[in-house]
Image (cartoon, rainbow, N blue to C red; front, side, top):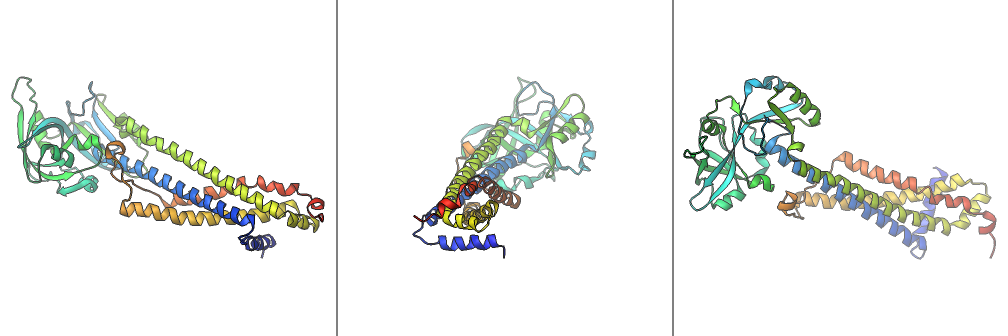
Length: 411
């Protein structure tokens, strides 16, 4: 066995004496490390969880890239059409970066139930629409059938359903503005077959899903004309790079925009989470390191006579430093082990039991989402271990200042 490790082990066994000052200091240091790693795990997992959940909701409604005609208005509705023949969609499907593509039309409407009415946007989707992206948010009923013959089935948010005071299978009337400003509105009768709820107010208070063919007829568009094309990408795809590539292939009157540019304020807000997490990680590492430095100094001062004896026997400063660093390493490992157990228990509890809730109008989610990959977990632990051990080398230099002739002098 390495003699330095053996000596460090014997020092720890003697430090277990509850009457010694080092025993109490070591317990405080272990507690500080444990609490620090708990706070870091919780802050990292909740930050990543919130960012992923909000991104997923935005992507589910608009895709990572949205292709639309250039327009001089900020409306969410489709006022100009693009033809499938104008795009290179067939080649896009062969790309190893694109997962699937939706062709949609958005049109404003006034929807009336038996007792109430509400203005909203009808999102027309066709047989190419992948409902799987909304499965997590479907809370009642089924998705509209957009793959067979034209029908009157629609999907409505529960928020809008409460405002309209309607239930599943209820009939509603939708009034669409006519192209002729003085003409009578276009009227359609729909049946609500499903309710969704994302917790995202921009979507839950605005969108109703219907068959795109209704909107094509109202707009007097052909079957190959659409208001927008939503592009969904595979994981690990560089969105900005692919968006630039697609934009360069489009005709001059058609634009390509990433989801981050469509909702800049939301993405800027969630990017602040990274800054907050960095501050928390830095503070927790500093607190843990300061406590460890205090514990190490107490250990060194309490063992000053032993250090003097080792020096008198020919031991070098570097060897003695290693002995105390081994003890510090053990304390950090023990604190990390306890902290990881507590932190993972709290994270898993939140994931499966939803202990903590949030206000959806502020955070866009009803429960605190958590996400912690194995790589993030390992990187965080090794990062804390490395930084703490590296910084503790400075207080361990006190060993070099201890003079054997002074500390071993008989009082």
